[in-house]
Amino acid sequence: MNISVVIPLLNEQESLTELHDWIAKVMQSNRFSYEIIFIDDGSTDGSWQTIEQLSQKDDNVKGIRFLKNFGKSQALHAGFEKAQGNVVITMDADLQDNPEEIPELYNMIVNDKYDLVSGWKKKRYDSVLSKNMPSKLFNWAARRTSGVKLHDFNCGLKAYHHNVIKNIDVNGEMHRYIPVLAKNAGFSNITEKVVLHQARKYGTTKFGMERFINGFLDLVTIWFISRFGRRPMHLFGALGVIMFIIGFGFTLYLGIDKLFFNTTGRLITERPQFYIALATMIIGTQFFIAGFLGEIILRTKEDKKRYLVKSELNL
Ligand SMILES: Nc1nc2c(ncn2[C@@H]2O[C@H](COP(=O)(O)OP(=O)(O)OP(=O)(O)O)[C@@H](O)[C@H]2O)c(=O)[nH]1
Ligand SMILES: [Mg+2]
Image 1 (cartoon, rainbow, N blue to C red):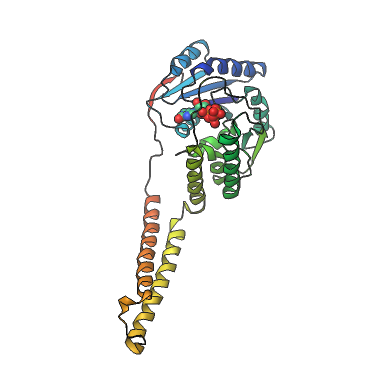
Image 2: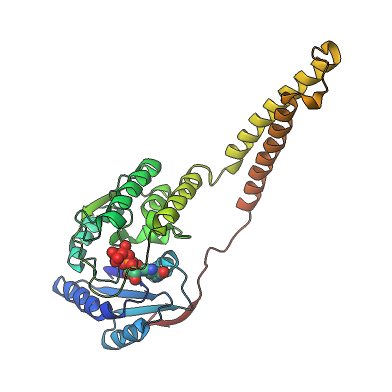
């Protein structure tokens, strides 16, 4: 199979038929063999009924329905697990991403040998204040921290080589950082392509301003995981040892001073060095223990799957 189109969605009933017909038209005119996997993440508006109808008409349509809303990252995770195509393309369900981009994205993965091509909505049809400005800042921070030079991490339209999606774990709200996850997993051939963006035609937006706060926190996590995720002791152990040494130095000074010189005549507990020593030694020990616990957790196997499927179509 050439292409799997993975479409996570939440309450997008009005758009689905139009989106399906458009994708099918593009696929047929390019003679691609393909599948469209819709992941309904606990919609309450009849999206699933529409997906069922589509799958009856068209064998290429597959569906996964979650028991409740588990979030976009989990939906992508489920879609990636089932995808069979040589190239996997993700897109939004709200008709803002243009299916006409698919052939060129496919071409870039197959012929130009890119691991991942990310869409770049260079010209956006969103409000300047609530989307464009925060988004620019967000992308700048993401570029600086991750070292992946993309202009539009949030773009739903992305294309992957099969190997990439089978070898990364998309968790938390990490769908924004799949390029970073891919890079950390060793897929370094990443680029972007300017894509057309349309204004939302039906339905309403699902993400508010909190996306930037959550997105930023996820960025901190990803920065940490990529640097110290597999060796927490190197960070926490080092911090702990440094702080402990500082505290121990002060303790030694206080002890020697008291025993042999007694310059001030004050009680040790009246001197600021005592409190510095106390605090740094306790915090240092805690850092050390945190690193130690991290190493233990790393060695315990964990189950990565966090969603439950209610029903599946054609899979
Ligand atoms: N699986 C899943 N998909 C979601 C969830 N929230 C949103 N989506 C889908 O993610 C895509 C992007 O969401 P949008 O609300 O369009 O976000 P946006 O494009 O940045 O915002 P607008 O410009 O207002 O459309 C759409 O296809 C949504 O249906 C969710 O909780 N789970
Ligand atoms: Mg949208």
